[in-house]
Image (tube, rainbow, N blue to C red; front, side, top):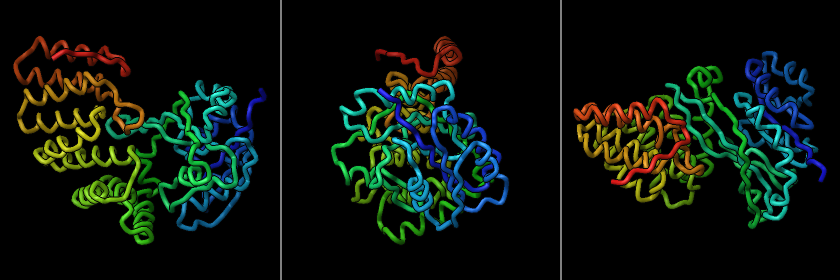
Length: 363
């Protein structure tokens, strides 16, 4: 079977520093590169052209969907891949993408989109991993919707409710959440403005409250962030399991940052029954209990997290929760409790453990 062609479509602005690394990671697997530039004043356009990209320059219209869809209009490949400039695909894994797209399962299971494993690099050497769709079959009826945090899946489901989104074992690394990169592009102010516009246009949509909570948390406006997370969790409208579980998680993280550990523990007890396999919730509960001085209960919560192992791929999970970070925190707690043998055991495990290792404990 002939290998399908892939069009890479990107929207950029002032990304001359990061664009080469992104394009270099996929240059060997894409058949064309389409860059939609929304007003760069640096060397971004020249960088794109050096990689053989077709560059389309358009004014910024306060909508990521408008810009993305402009690129989709130019794509000629069988499949469309989209990335941001601060993302790069694992070069060694990328080479197998085209072969994966030829497999019979793609056709038999009506797979119209593809998800990748994303690793979001956070402050403090933490990494959050989750699965995100970044490929779609090139069909004119598939288009992005929304000013910000744009989505293509709704238009896909509208055309074909039975279609599926597949997943490939290929990692994409993203460092756009690091403070230096957020400041560089003033992403928070831009996203906040677009989200407020989105709420005016679609009042009550829970997903926009969730996203606004994330931006406010990054701005350290914690009370406002908490208010939006609570609104996202209280509304009647449906949002995806990924966003809902993430809203529960970031409400706990916000409360932790505020030092409201009792509220953190109480909310964790509400969240865990809804997502009993989401490891991060147990680990965060343990953090709250430890801060309150409830060492034995904190140990129990962390042992639950460790017995679960890494959270399933559908959740936005911190790498190390359920493995080495949980072992590290257990070691610290056992040391606090005066149980040095247990402390040494878990601290040793934390230093030796592979991040994908699962350990089963019997209570």
